[in-house]
Image 1 (cartoon, helix red, strand yellow):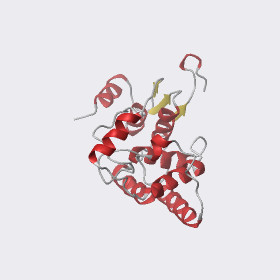
Image 2 (cartoon, one colour):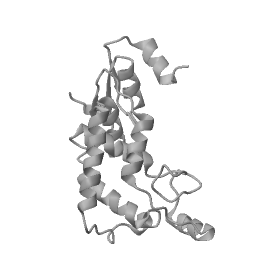
Image 3 (tube, one colour):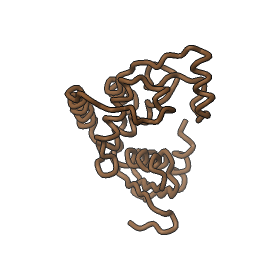
Length: 199
C-alpha cells in the first residue's frame, strides 16, 4: 500500500507537476513527489526541518556521500584536541566524551546550508543522534520525546545508565546503507516566510 501522502500526490497531480509544501517538516511530501516524478518543493523556517527537506529534495550520489564521511573520519583521526568542556551539561550527560568530540567536530565541519552532500550527512547524523538501540549515539532513554533535564539526570542515576562509546562515522555509514534512495527527479528547499515566498 502507498503512503497516504503518495496517494494524495497521485490523485491531485501528474508527472512533471510542481508539488509545493509550504510547511515541509521532515520533507516527506517533497521526497514522495520526487520519487513519483513530480518536482517537490518544500519550505520551512525551522533549521532542522529545512536541512531534512533540503536533503530529500536533492539526494547526492551514494558514493560521494560515503567518500565525504570517510574524509571527515580521516580528518577527525588527525585532530588532537577537541574541547568539549564548554558544551551544555545537559548534552554532556547523555553522550560519551569520545562520541561528543566527534559530534562537535562534525558540527563545525559540515556546511549543511550550502553543500548538498554535507546536508545529507547532517540529516543522517540527526537520524542517529538519539534512540533506543546500538544504532544510535546517545544514552538510551525510555522515550524519544523531549524530557526535562532533571528527569533525565534522575533516571540515569536511578537506573545506573552508562553513556555508550559509539563511533559516529561507523554509524553514519550503516545508516546510509539502511535508508539511501535517490529519486530521478530533483526538487527544491527554501527557508522563507511562507507568506512571502519567492523563487
